Figure 1 (cartoon, helix red, strand yellow):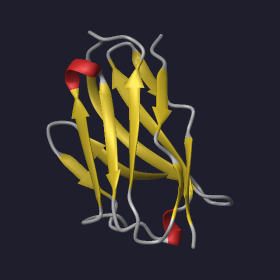
Figure 2 (figure 1 turned 45 degrees about the vertical axis):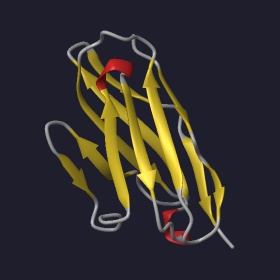
Figure 3 (figure 1 turned 90 degrees about the horizontal axis):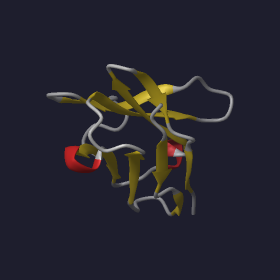
Figure 4 (figure 1 turned 90 degrees about the vertical axis):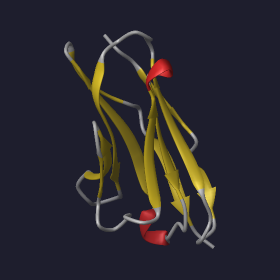
Length: 113
């Protein structure tokens, strides 16, 4: 089993920035897919950004968020700039390996003045 540990969430004012991090428990695990998802109260979980050989972004965050990875650390990051109140949600990281797919515990991001 692979455990994912998220960090970096918090409270930020509109226009501010946060950087989320998600690290897998075991280095050396082959991870072919990484992504970030979010879920706001009363709404379905939605994809924010994914990365394989390329990156993809939801239209709502394109140009503001950047997903990246550090293969040596089995870690995926989400740099969030120009944050808006509508970005408020619990953010979950997701990774896929040959052995299965895994989710982080979620980290709260609140954008409010």
